[in-house]
Amino acid sequence: AQSVTQPDIHITVSEGASLELRCNYSYGATPYLFWYVQSPGQGLQLLLKYFSGDTLVQGIKGFEAEFKRSQSSFNLRKPSVHWSDAAEYFCAVGYNNNDMRFGAGTRLTVKP
Amino acid sequence: DAGVIQSPRHEVTEMGQEVTLRCKPISGHNSLFWYRQTMMRGLELLIYFNNNVPIDDSGMPEDRFSAKMPNASFSTLKIQPSEPRDSAVYFCASSLSGTLQYFGPGTRLLVL
View 1 (cartoon, rainbow over the protein chains, first blue to last red):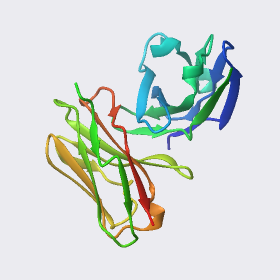
View 2: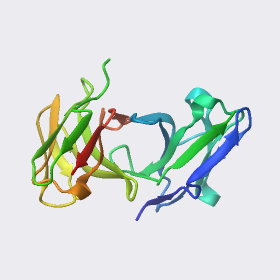
View 3: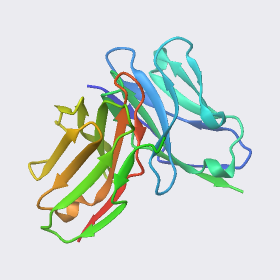
View 4: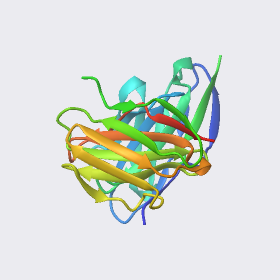
């Protein structure tokens, strides 16, 4: 059965510092991979997705993620965090767009 | 585009009462999803429809929950009778089959 693990429940970084949020998955085949962001009181917004092809994926708001098959990982990165990036981040995997499983989420706090 | 519309945004009710959550998907989308988000269980898929037909309702917690999609532009999620453990944020999402899911702002439900 497919599953998603986000090992870090809460991460705090200083504004301007780099960020990496971890995501590991368990899957029988190459999955579809997604990162969503949820601001307080808001719905989920898609940051980026991986279906196939180039394993380094660029998303919105300066985020990128890299699919590493050997490590079953899809970590999210940003070179310089802004205060507005404070939110909850969810990694998701699926057979297709109709069958996604979400990780537990990582809450990002940005220090001034 | 108005995006996915959910109503109400907040609902407070008493145990035993019927609760109806509403969703209007993005025009032209033919898949609709209901999710529940809680601190304990994270984001869970409850049910999804394709062309107004329920495809997978394995995530529906129990018979107290029911969902309908009478037409392509409207869906309801009903809880009858409601219980305190149903308190959560309920999200609706829609997609054009085979593409990305777009989430609504959610309905925050509190059952007293």
